Length: 506
Image 1 (tube, rainbow, N blue to C red):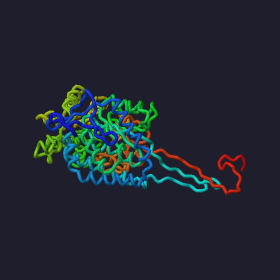
Image 2 (cartoon, rainbow, N blue to C red; image 1 turned 135 degrees about the vertical axis):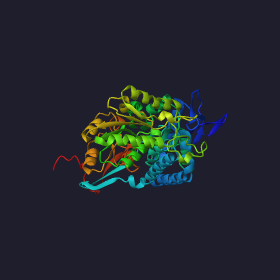
Image 3 (cartoon, rainbow, N blue to C red; image 1 turned 90 degrees about the vertical axis):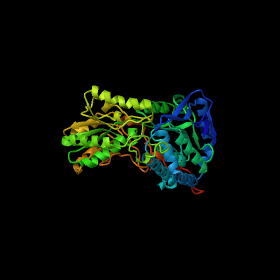
Image 4 (cartoon, rainbow, N blue to C red; image 1 turned 120 degrees about the vertical axis):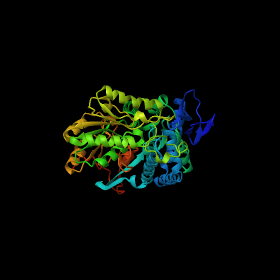
């Protein structure tokens, strides 16, 4: 990482070399705890993308022919280096993103799990065989890499989301080009350094930085075979449509508006803690954040009262340990940018205009030079309100009130998104109905954030996902491989030839 006037310049990794791109357009990288610029991200264009993709394409044949056991051993070494530098990586996330140290460590743990999953690739790439599928004919089905893969990742999980993608892609025998968020490039750069240290050959993993022009060049490049994307729904839709139009495989995860249903028999104290962790974790900047709490029957009043008390007691402030000696005790850190903080805060005025009640106003916690905004609770919301329909991506929890579980399920049916949903209850029947019928791909029962771990796919539905094969788990392996079926027959030397499958007689 080079520096100019004490501000780091995020380099690109192309063909094993760390390089700086020639550009007139830059993105400032802020420390959200202080509001200060700590780095600059170059906006690369088509030329840099061409270099990175060509480097990946050049490295592909040899890497694809590398035994899968050797590819897995690189992942083992990479995991060991991540563990060795664990606190450094977590602190870097806090510094460039703003989430608390505890949240950064949790993010990193999830990323390590993905590397562990990828390290088991020899077992997961085993094919299928069936001898004598026809007389004297054996059949086999084996997995092959798809080629040069691209990952386009968001700012909110600068370690975990890239690690959802490239360890599996690389272990499957592909090469990879990562385009991290221009707002949080430093974690990706550090991961690239550790991959190089782990012995990954030059060109197998590359990094380019940029914004729209960079993304468009990646989506349309002739030598790119597959694209993985995580971001907002409007952009996910564009990525999917553009990538598939140009013949790419695409998995594009979009936004969300996750509903959390609280039944009258729920343990309110435990539910409040889970709701707060879901809605206010990572300052609400995650696609699995709880956004709408749907209180059934008489659960509304005690729920709102508990949420307000919990929110008022939360310690909100700078999360960077270099800035605050109390960083380890912070319950919620700042948002990514000041303009984003203002946008999130504006929804409180929008809610009031639409007829809702602001039971807890997080703007009262906003102070200092960092991008801090406290937790908010908006009560008595209706399905037509903007705070219910739109993804806010901040620490704002809306509370709707209904009389029955059927009404709560109907609210889910009316939501355009479909990432996650949760029910809090002691009733097995209610839980069974909810997990079977709610219109979302990831369901929690008394679990605030139902995000699957590495071994299961991240199964967003509706406008929360565009594509056929999801990120993570065995679906991730399917996405990064293509299958080849071979039929083999070895006739005796004296045997006359006949087609074993398309026989004319019986």
